[in-house]
Amino acid sequence: MKYIDEFRDKHMAASMARAIWAEVEERRTYHIMEFCGGHTHAIARYGLPDLLPSSIRLVHGPGCPVCVLPIGRIDMAINLARDGGVILCTYADVVRVPATDRESLLAIKAAGADVVMVYSVQDALQVARRNPDREVVFFAIGFETTTPPTAAAILEAKRLGMRNFTVICNHVLTPSAIQSLLDSPEVRQMGTVRIDGFIGPSHVSAVIGSRPYEFFAQEYEKPVVIAGFEPLDVLQSVWMLVRQINEGRAIVENQFTRAVTREGNTKAQTLVTEVFELARTFEWRGLGIVPYSSLRIQNRYGAFDAERRFGLRPTSVPDHKGCECGAILRGVKHPHDCRLFGGACVPESPMGSCMVSSEGACAAHYTYGRYRRDGAPALRRAAGKS
Image 1 (cartoon, helix red, strand yellow):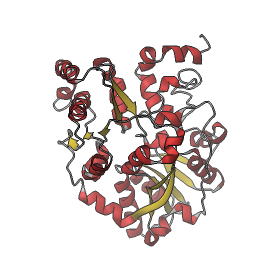
Image 2 (cartoon, rainbow, N blue to C red):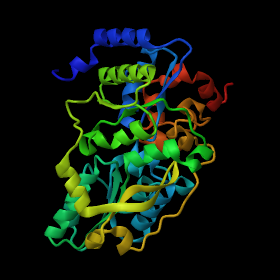
Image 3 (cartoon, one colour):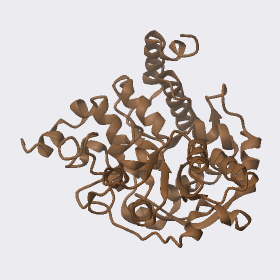
Image 4 (cartoon, rainbow, N blue to C red):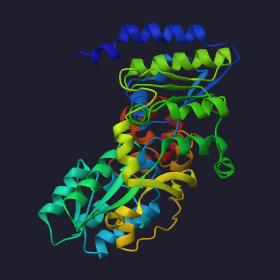
């Protein structure tokens, strides 16, 4: 298949791996964080750590929007769908996230609540059109990639004069999370890991461009390479980062030139700035309260803000005591470090958000068998066989 097989060629992968082995310096360790869950998925699926020297440590970051959504906001959606008489629409991964007392949107749907799984925000608009006498709420979630479609839907709802469609906005911003990992005293108190460079997200960068990451290269002296999702993309990006680290450089390089530019998608950016504005604070699972890290609906579109219409107020709820999702999202721990992983917590019965989403680190490691190589002792402990 053209443009797919070319980026999965095993001979080219072996050649790149040999080049990386030749570049690494003795007695040096390279800590490289991939921020995007799509990269975590690719790394596990294609077994890329097995091709790399042990001195290169790939660190998983908070790059899955389902994973970083705090329990309190899921509780808020559950309460609204169960007690508010609304039709609540959201994506399939979201409905499976365990909230307080292991409740979920999927569980209340089974009990009779009107929870509808959709593929896009446009599907939610269609639900609102088909049910003009019902309040329809779209539980929006995602990084900068999915924000423009939500903005477009709000603009369309206003144009059509729809009064039964509102949005709970959970759109969060990638650069703010990166800065929090590097700079926040609160996050450091919870535990952080050394980071020598970043594999920058691809779909997010297609929207916002490579320019926002220049700040991290300049102010924190951390190299960033924006990478595509295919295995050769990731390997080449690791190679580029190793070279920068060896040479003491810290710049933004764009490996994913076939989709990302420095300026990004300016039309999408215009849509977002028309509808949304920065929120002062937002809670991230694993990072806590991160200032100016999310978006909220502007006052002029307040009629489409479900939090205003229904007086919703999320509360801060701690994670399950045995769940290590918070530490995994900060890169402090690996999935196999969690005593629940592979035993009490599996994709069919997840205890934490990192096992719910297909892009979550725990789900990726479990699905592609990384735990068999990386975490056999932890898995035996979880199964009570140690």
